[in-house]
Image 1 (cartoon, one colour):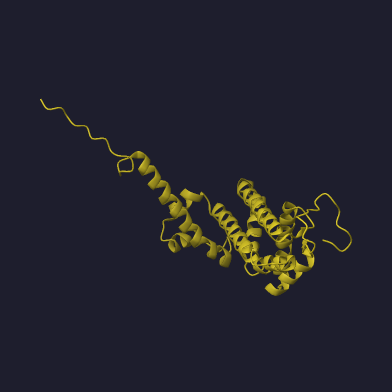
Image 2 (cartoon, helix red, strand yellow; image 1 turned 90 degrees about the horizontal axis):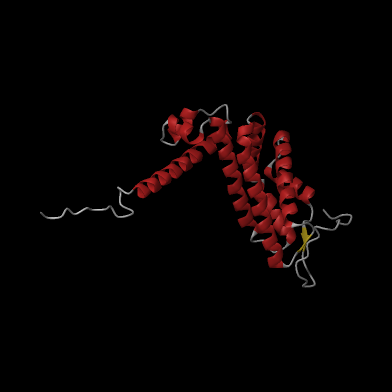
Length: 232
């Protein structure tokens, strides 16, 4: 009697459980991304109350049940959209500031880019929402920490690259920048200020965060000393 030949599926074939799991995860990430892409502009234009799950599903060519499967609630989707939007803005801001060669130009590029969109105001709405929904706070906390850490890294890199003298440690500068951005933009929206006015107010509040190093000295951070009068 001829021996039976047992065929074992090769890894990566459709019948492989690992392959199926990878395909499922990939499809899930794609669907989440599509839902976020569809929901973000609708939330920013209509607000949370003015946007329905069915509207988002229609825009994403998905089913309402897929939204609740991936995000549980409309509020959770709103917060995730706002957090993602802010991190995208942070990346765009860092890229715009890379072109600056002086501390003043660097700060101006940051302020101009941040005030040119409504992403910060969108994120502020998510912050307010977490006051009533503490279960959504961890995502906001992680976003803020990532915002600060990546901002500090980008700022430290620029200071090192150009030999500027930072008046504050990079982490402190990053946290201060985003705190000022959120405060100024929220107040500005309430007062009906234009993007140019918001940018001007941010520059006024921030002042000089670093100075050009004219004597060729290495990077010196003044995080352990107190800035003199007139320094910010």
